Image (cartoon, rainbow, N blue to C red; front, side, top):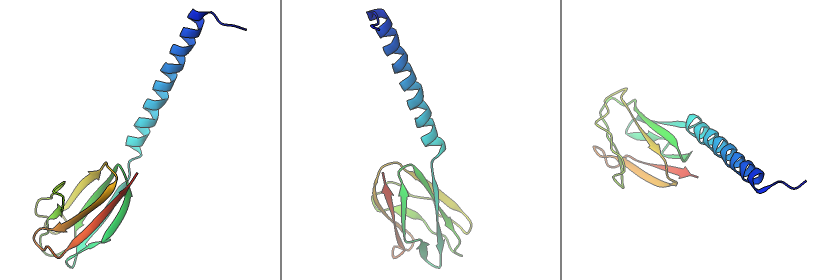
Amino acid sequence: MRLSLPSQLRLSAAAALLAGVLTGAVASYAVVGAEEATATIDNFTFAPARLTVKAGTTVTWRNEDDIPHIVTASSRLFKSKALDTDDSFSFTFTAPGTYEYFCSLHPRMTGTVVVEP
């Protein structure tokens, strides 16, 4: 069976609309399904010292130490306020790469977040 040109165009438009709807559903799921990860700050260390996550993951640092700390990206991509005991700071990593960070009050405290696609 051969379809007329107007019928083919209607089918093409319907297919494009369906593809757009499905793509939107997938994109919405990616946002809804975003991951979270936590790093703790205690005894002048970040734990884990190296954290591997997928792009789109929000990492939260929680200060469980008795003194303030500041989470600072070596690249200056992010920087927390001074985090007192039980304070936290979050950052969402959207691009793959290796992100080194440190405590700007105690520069020997270092950590790394590796973001995979």
